[in-house]
Image (cartoon, rainbow, N blue to C red; front, top):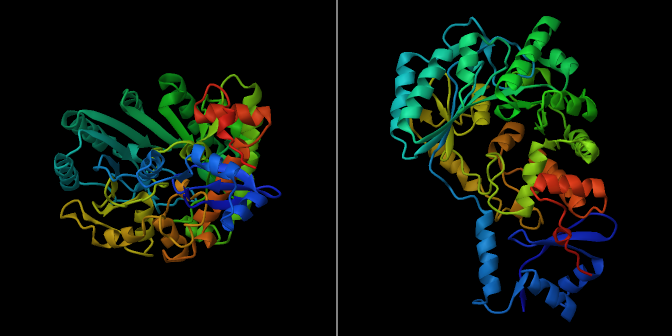
Length: 469
């Protein structure tokens, strides 16, 4: 019998989580670890490992084939470009201190697409081979260029068989024409709701009149279009975190059932106002408390609520192929399946890459919409886009569920070869996957109810919590 390599991590007391390269996992103890390391596995060990796909007999054994299939399905296969972020303007009608894109004031000239850029975008779209396209409008405040949004949507609807549009708007000033645009069935709203009215006003709107206007517009959007067409994301200052309960109450008051917690991103204007200090531990503690608060809420709530990113990571543990979130893939190849067209026509592999470039830290651009793609720099960066053979990742039991974020490493540390266990990315994801396994192996009925809801199961399945002694 040959055992596939097992990685392990202590969780509670003398208990350890073991996992193989394909993401198969179980919990055991120090005694099993010592037998495994000494190559002294007993018959019970051998039976358990074989029955659960952690070992095989011969290379042509179906168990080996099954393992190889599961391992391959954990990898993100590079797809054709079918997702584009468009930035038709960098102008904005708010002046948020944590703005990560370094927006400009609403009346500042020279930061919008002109006709030449719009025509180049259409030519670029015409050259795509995909039959379906997702377009995300960002800014600045994209509704300040509503005419461009209308023309882009009309072009795409005729050019592609399937289309989806997302408008990332602050919902601060929305006229009748904009509401009409947003009402289309293929068009969705993404906005910012910073925890609760008090935090939102402190970080974004500054004055009560603007705060009231935002919440009136958010209420209108949800009531008119339904909560499924509106997503709201909170950006939180780790130095001044609201209580989890207040955040949950604010979102559920609008019928919003998915909350994507995000700390202030140390990019753009945020680099000036927010100190570059280690806040990872404080954020991890808050995130864990927030998940616990959601579990308590869901125990009696008629409609469950999720923390989007935690649920995404949970599903990556439980099944392969869950690669929808572009910041957590392995390999995470930049500049191929999606890209960004900035206000000046410059092309970037990610929105964060344009932020890093805009502040002069690194040039992560990929050419220009007028002159064409140039992936030379980004493809050099892509040499490090996988965690499969990284010396700091190969011994981690969470490797199969995790990924890489090279742009975040460059932004924070100015390098991509930082020891992974010292990076914010690694420390945050270790915390999240620790929490995932805490819930998988919990006997608390409240935790099991939320786990099943978030995993998409009718009820908790005990076989998820495999244990070997």
